[in-house]
Image 1 (tube, rainbow over the protein chains, first blue to last red):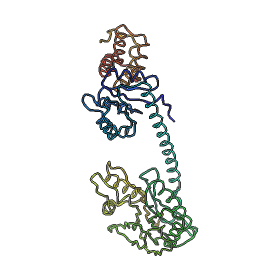
Image 2 (tube, rainbow over the protein chains, first blue to last red):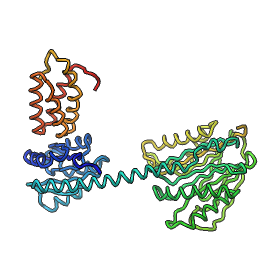
Image 3 (cartoon, rainbow over the protein chains, first blue to last red):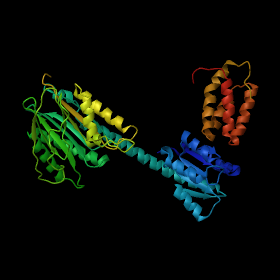
Image 4 (cartoon, rainbow over the protein chains, first blue to last red):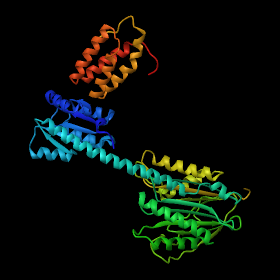
Length: 382
Length: 85
């Protein structure tokens, strides 16, 4: 936990004797910033974010309520404790201070001991709060590392000689997310590709993603058809699913003959087929509900024969549902239009180009959902 | 406040400390500016800079950070370029 003597207190007060008293009470124990106007207080807080603010209400120019509102609106000072200082004992003024975002109230004339005790109490609470947040943030960073470690480490070596050029990217919207992908080679030489999206976000989705990925990895080595893998994964998830979470899952198996692929889906959109000289198309239909909730689901797969140069592009809804500042989604149309206009010669270029197009569409708007893009290009000469 | 015409070489070395002082004053940082000024005042200064340091102390004691900052800015503008700070 932070040493309280490193804490910075911002005193915002226009009356000189009151400033002197507060400085006298606090300068030996804390770092102090002092301003006599609200405008300067905001400037100071932006330069040296305080750990606590002592804020007068009636000042020339901007009053304390407005300063408080603006501090609460700024990310750096959103949660900093604010103690209002005022001669106004009226309960309505106190209520107004709390409504503006204040945490406590000191009535003038101050008692040195009371100032010191209240300041220390709020700083201790803030330091504890900060340390808990840091601990959680640290655990989430580790969770992210673990989650990224679950994903296939070396897609290129696992697909070498299969006639497939595979590349994937997964970008969680938060530290951990619910998207997943898997690429593995079975003992018979088939390549299994799965892409999924767990309901919800954050840690719960991350845990469900880890379970789902492990199940996909296990079932893909035991079952030869994609619909069998999906049904087995769904049944296993449903058997231990206290929060009724679910996952959309698309599973494709390439082989045993080069160019053969069969695909099954549980609530997940069909991959997009990019065939040289043809517009992008959706070769598979999603015939099944999401996986993980109801045991005994039925699923079926659909076959496709790939031609040299064909690419299947799998993605999650973080791609189609990426919003821009005008609240417009990138959409399925955005994906297919981009892919139609930008043919590439490698899976890596397809993935990187589509991701860049999504980013360009979203602009400054923060990513709201996990993004996964996986491209599998059929190149039988490789 | 003016900067002496014949500057001792050491004056150029004042720049980093004065820049730190200016940054503290610009942020209304009472503790930081008091500490930075104390460090400057401990150096061997020409008479007029000593006087300036003394008036800066008074301004900081009066919480007049803007005025103190303007004075420091003037002193910085009159200093020879020192090593990169």
